[in-house]
Length: 299
Image (cartoon, rainbow, N blue to C red):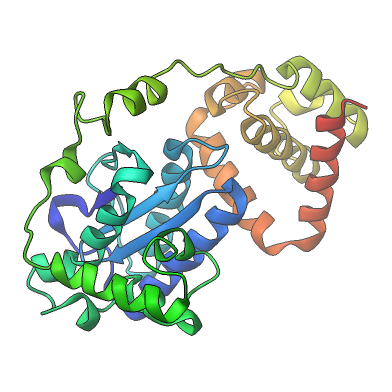
């Protein structure tokens, strides 16, 4: 997966920027349940080898890019888009190509003439592969390392040779663009399995049921939430319901704006404020988790 700065502009200007990005990566991994096998945080782009969990990659990247853009704009006093459109990604057969992809990512600074070797590069996961003490909790190295040896020492030594052997391989068109229209990289059996239609799980409830249940729990009538009043209490409940509807994939933000007779732009802005508060307010987190449990249980 590659995400590039708008017009090749920097997406990282300071060490603090990269640390903020990593903090969001960690939060995303905890929230969406995906696994990160390798990364490179270049000045104007990032590369990652991600194994998705239940949440689709689109949701993972939308959340990450949106939140980081907000951080970057605030700290560098700018406005507007930070990234060049949508991320680029292909689905690979991990049994055949994961090791190659991890090597390719670690050699990204070498290809871009930013380092003479992967070992000398900054801001990649290579050092974590070489030293367990440098491995952040949101990175997984064992999947790859266990294919290179039976002991930690042997596997790291073999992995280092493998990565160094790829320093001059140049651009790997297959790893960057894949086959089958750029969607995936693997043999026919893998392609058939990967392209098999996914059964979409139905929502756990309808929007009507969700709104009714939360209104009952909050002791408020929906009519109050649809009124033009800007009362703080009703606004919080409205944003809570919107958050829950989106997180549980019951309804989109557009649908919620229509439901509550609100302007979409205003709803989007308020939802950002709500999510920011949710990150910092322990009591609000506790309350929202309680509502989520109630909705999921169907009680």
